[in-house]
Length: 156
Image (cartoon, rainbow, N blue to C red):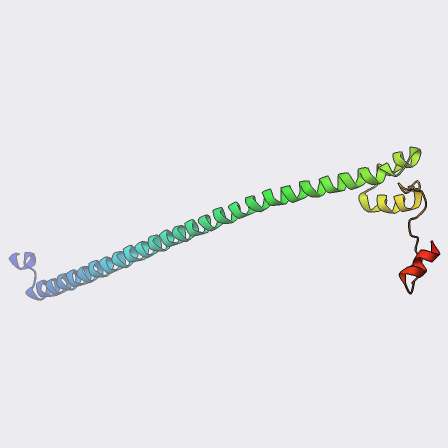
């Protein structure tokens, strides 16, 4: 019976070779896993680096945005000033044009914009008399030419 308990040496050698093969396979798998983890860590590091660079670029874009926003704010102030001046000009022109009208025409014309008001005033304005309605001094005739001072004196 002692033969039954003993295993043949061939099987023992076979088991050792299988065990060695399994150890080698395990070592190979461990080294491959280690390489894979190293690659994963390197890829994570690259991704983190890329994301950090993206954030840095976004900061630059943020600075660009802020400087552009400042320019827009300055332009907005300038535009507001120009717009206010334009509105004052239009208001003064409208008042001057409305001053040329009387009664119902004035009431109607108050609702018109400046361009239509100009046309309306051309048609309906009361006639403005010149300040000096007296005789014209000198007139439009060309002065008479005299040959000498004596001729001029004789004329008067």
